[in-house]
Length: 397
Image 1 (cartoon, rainbow, N blue to C red):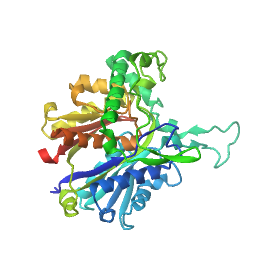
Image 2 (spheres, rainbow, N blue to C red):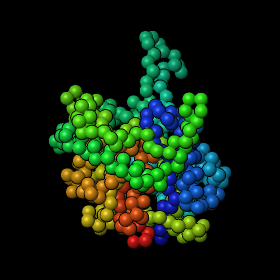
Image 3 (spheres, one colour):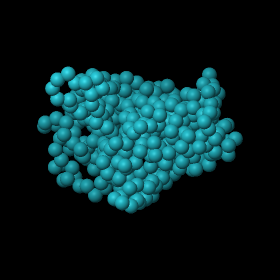
Image 4 (cartoon, helix red, strand yellow):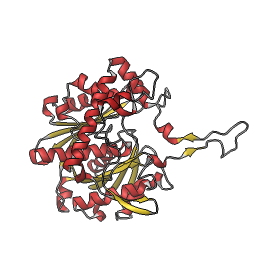
């Protein structure tokens, strides 16, 4: 077994742009380079010392999207001799990038890595699957690649329909979901006002008509929304359903990155590690209720490390849908006073390749600001999986 101590350092992201708005003309790789450069600067590390780049992504876009990890690596000054890898684990892709980087280091295939990920769903192409060989007869229909990304591969249900299934099976109400959504928006607003989120965001230049401007704040949060406005939104996935745009995660664009390294290697480079990456757990769950994923994943993680819920000071649980968080609260007893205190997918948005890394940045900063010891980052994943990661404050270990 490896004796290496895996730690995280640096950590920055772009602001998240609302679907079709400020970041729609920005290449996905440029989002990654912006986040990675800021991450490297914050860590105070020479990019030439990084062995690997791991990029999490669900929907490759642009001409270089399939090579994003390599493009980001060379774009920030990593050596040509360094290695690069794209990974995809649905909504956990950003977290998987961090785990994969850690596995490379634990197995002795490097000491230092850049990891994270991103999406630019606004640039998702329409697909014509017939033109290459010619349509035989009838109309040739363009298919939306974003629709492919959001559908369960087995039932072809949209992910929001799986949230409806979870709500049906466990009787979570529309009112409960909207209440959670309102809290998320208010918490994001408070985190913007306090400057908590600004510490993690690297401004990016975006086109604004014929000129450009610097974008430094997440575009999706709606902290002034009211309970009445949320209640008036119509269900979008099922007639008479409970899941609405207001209690679902936002479709957004953005990237987030962190430095992953063996502690000794980081310290040799003069880099101060922020948290220890202690362990992770990944489980499979029924695809039709994929939102239940965090519950068994967190249970497995705690059991693997001989911990109880009371040993965890803080949770980041992805708000894919409010039903996911209601389910985690009911099944595990996780408190709202220790979970998603700075907003989440419902308010900040959810670009799957970036979300896990974004949540990791929040958890790291929370542990540092509060001097608490342990945090868990967890999420459900389309096609039926759950993931949970255990982080430990270096100063309290």
